[in-house]
Length: 430
Ligand code: XMP
Image 1 (cartoon, helix red, strand yellow):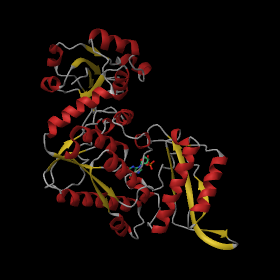
Image 2 (cartoon, helix red, strand yellow):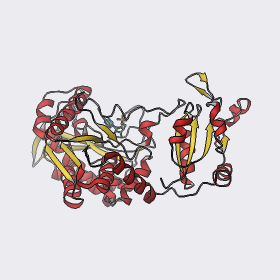
Image 3 (cartoon, protein in one colour):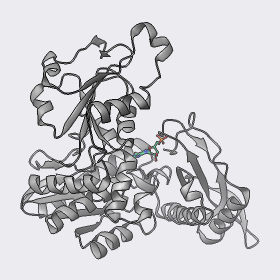
């Protein structure tokens, strides 16, 4: 390990990730660990330079008062406690340790070096991956999303052709999305990539299914089945690559940091397909994942793309999916993205997409009455996807998009803009 580390022990604070971020912003690597970490577990961590006890207002976890193991005090690490005394907690509840105190502790007391950067991180991970995997093979479901793409790039750098990427096209991808995954990973990065076009299989399973949760279940379940079938065709795979990132494993809120997702993520793969996980991004926050992707040479567009739900356009083609409406959502979405990029909105707006409902409205085309679908445009900004506000898109931009959709997308005679914040509306329609 090249990087010094400051360990934050969670004694019930809600601000652990904020403190970790602040320390990383100072150029020093930081990890959050549970309050009951043992001496052995602590010693197993590389390059620990100091420990921060973070108890928030009252050092309570799950309603129970907590302390660290007393032996930890005897290990000789510099320690600082950033609890808020109970008597002052009403006043100081949301206050964080000021930057000067942190700096003094980290650099003067712990003598940590500011050597946390992506280059070092990647070198460390490459070494760790090679050590973990040896000459064995790793399987990775490469969706083309940010996390799986960055994991793929990292694994390609570490083990090259020992990585087998499987890209399942469920037919609900955006326009040219699967093509660009193949182009970047197979053609440019020379990855060992299995491309599975499962479009017809997914669409036939989804036929006449209108309930959103049912649709999600079918898409998720079918995805695992297709992936599993591919995994069974491959020989000698021992590891499964996963795009687990730090927010996935740190429970937000007042509870002690726990492994929440990484083991469930394998999600539904049958018992006899047991893989050991390789999760090289599990210590990174989302923006660090993006920086890592750029450092690994992935294209900016891939690393900075907006969030896209797993069920893809399946939850934007409302109700029971039909091919004509699915095509309409896909084409309208491509136009929206193109025009947002032209207007510079792609760098400003958090998420923007189109939706096609499963009802028609009356219109006129070529002097004749037509009864066709509508496209709804949604563009929102948010910090954490829990609440959202709409982007007040310039009318001229909206008009250009509308005219293009009406001229270029079949079966559509009307375009609407969704004005609803979250809550009460959710970001997606289903
Ligand atoms: P909602 O609609 O709940 O969306 O306001 C919040 C964020 O989550 C995304 N989203 C999903 N992502 N699978 C995903 O991977 C899903 O089933 C799903 N549903 C919603 C949504 O795009 C938004 O960013």
